[in-house]
Length: 444
Ligand SMILES: NC(=O)N[C@@H](O)C(=O)O
Ligand SMILES: [Mn+2]
Ligand SMILES: [Mn+2]
Image (cartoon, rainbow, N blue to C red; front, side, top):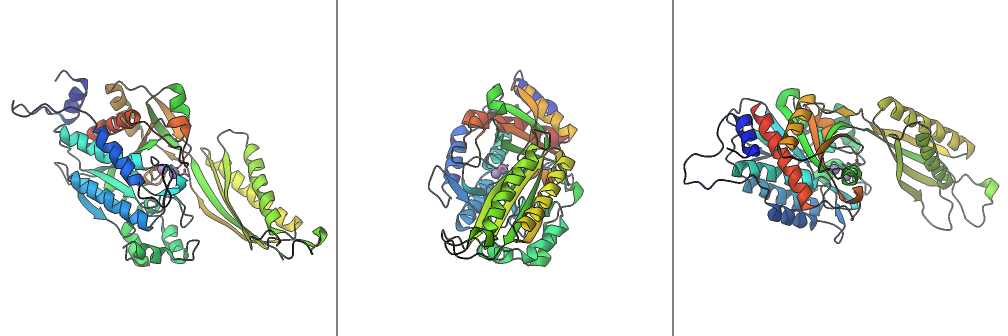
């Protein structure tokens, strides 16, 4: 064919994609943008808050509705559907040689409180459309292609990020920790899962573990969640590494007391200890010597939470990241020292300093970076190599499979807020690069 994309697919698959019989209309390598936009908009309606914001928390009623919606779309795409014990959902398109390890792609649909409708969603609905694009083109994969909707990439309900992909990566500690894990309403992980239709007990968690060579490759399409691609007018980002996230839960306890009657010298205010620690996080991050080090205190809760009562207990959750694991660990250590010295100085008890996760960064596989680069070039889409400062399920899929990520621009780099937005033109470009990359990797 004279069409560069076809030539590429023919090259990839080693056989003509254009069915020779004159009867079949020649297909076009195009994304059904209207349907895809409708799907993104419809999925956003499964939310616990009114539009344009989206809140969709793990195993909530809206999450269950959204999961059924995804399964319906997988069925429509002609995929065979499987769900594991914690609700990771798999849609498979069998290749010509099902004995070969499959190529997987996917992302998440859970959304933190008051966020947008593109984070993760583009990587799930876009993956399904990439499959549809290849099917419409008459392409037949050699390796099977599998779309994965990961359970709970966001840490909202149980404070654990990438819960589904961590378990797939076989992280035993997490399986153990889930035994005693409860959410803010004291509902256990297992009870929450049961309420969403996942009747599992602790023993079942190991069945979620995936063997190292189960997949030959994993690719995730995602909005950049930063401003670079938009600022540089580039449609495609090829991710080379994902920064290393860590999260910490800290609690201080003091005597509390009456806001009027207790004089300042007699106080040991757990609230002020929390405030001081939050500023210490910022100080340690700013002193790391690198712009790549970030730190956020996204949660501070005070008990009893009354204006005229001195806080007797404070609960703080800290998120710190860096592409340099050692530098990130230094920050974690310094934050720990600050928590201890603040507790001493303010005569409060440091009742909890719990490191929830302290993950290493992940590198993309050269082979997949090459396949994504070729795909972008064949599609005449300018692109750049870049790192991801946000974490993704890819961070853990990299432990069991060669990994790669495709970024598309998003409005002003906004994310985790209702103003999050990616144009359908940019999404369609991402879907095409993903489709071509999947085609290539499925015949490798
Ligand atoms: N991609 C993304 O937003 N992941 C988040 O959970 C994060 O905090 O990085
Ligand atoms: Mn997110
Ligand atoms: Mn995401």
